[in-house]
Length: 245
Figure 1: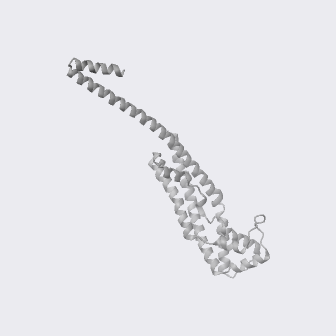
Figure 2: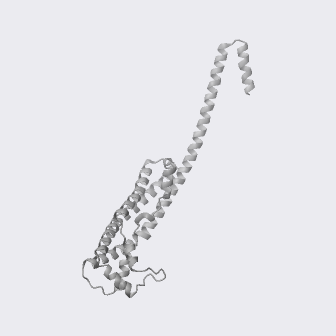
Figure 3: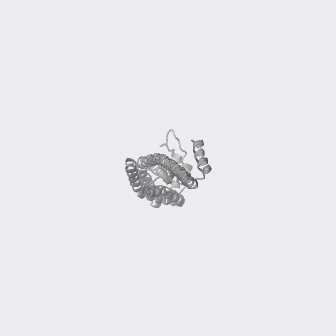
């Protein structure tokens, strides 16, 4: 084919048909340009198809991560937080007032629950979102409304880490320093340990620890329901977007 085209060009030049040659040359250029445009169009179409497929995968990954986070929030944090607050309030009441404790072991076990969930939302996953940001693939999410909601959700998790640092207390270190933990019998507290703990829980140091931990527990309590609802809203948006593809 190339030889045939060259032969036509040579014949036109030999016959000194400049006008026809120019028309031919322009036509040839147009054909090349059209060919390039078609190739680019096919490439863009193919890339767009790949991007849409990748976007669907990423949206599904975000959805699964938020669903898992909501499960952790609901079953692990939300259900256990009232016990944490109850234990801290009991400790606060005991450390601030001269009240009589009838069942020392039950009281100490209750107070020990104040050491639950000290890392707050740190157990929630951010892996998918962090990966999308680090690879630059988050830009493949085409809906700005979804992008904004997803960013706000994960920024909320990051903000909680700051709260943890602000209110971070040594409640676990304090309690376990008084009471050696036995994993085979976690509710066991010796008479010696119980006596030492009851004295320590009257200290100014422990009172300050309880106040800090209680402040964080209340801030976490106020945040959980909103975070779950936020996650459900994102999942709803993602489902709508995936159904439209």
